[in-house]
Image (cartoon, rainbow, N blue to C red; front, side, top):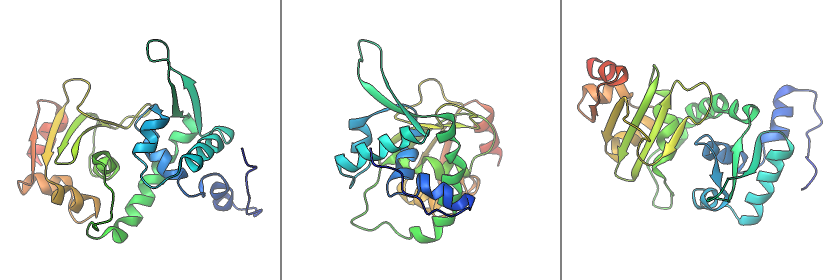
Length: 208
C-alpha cells in the first residue's frame, strides 16, 4: 500500500481530495453504493481500470476508512468489498458531482462504455419519497432504494421483492434524464416512462 499523497494545504477541500482525488476512487464508490461487491464484479463494471490500480485503490480506501473487505460465510466463502458509513457519506458528493457533470455528458459516443446501473444515481436525483423501485432498460434491469438512509442505494438486476413502482423506459429517455434535460415526472406525463405498481411512489408518479 503506497503512502497517501497530500496537497499539504490546510483546506477541507484539499484534505478531501487527498482521500478521494485519485483516479477511479469515486467510481469505485459509485459501484459500492450498490452494496458488497466481489473484486471480479467490480473489475467487470469498471471498464478501463487495470487490476493493479483497482487493487491499490481498494487498499487505499480501507486505509482511509472508506471501505472494508470481509469474507462471506459458506457456501459463498468469497471476499467482498463494501463501504463504511464514512464511505457512504460520499453519496451526496457523487450526486452533486453528477449534477454538475450533466452539461458534460452530451450524446453517447461510440467509444463510451455503459452499464444499466450507471443510470441509478441520475434517476435517484429525480425521485422523491421512499420505496423500492425496479427500472427496466434495454441495457438491463436494476432497482433503487429511494430515500434509503443506510445500506445500498441501488442494486443490479430485478428488485429483490415486489417493488413499490416499476419503471419501463427506453435508452433515449434515460439518457435525457441523466443529462438533466428531462425529469422523471415529465417523462411519465409525456408517456415516455411506463409506471406500474401499487405503492405510494407509483401512485405519485402516475398522478404527477
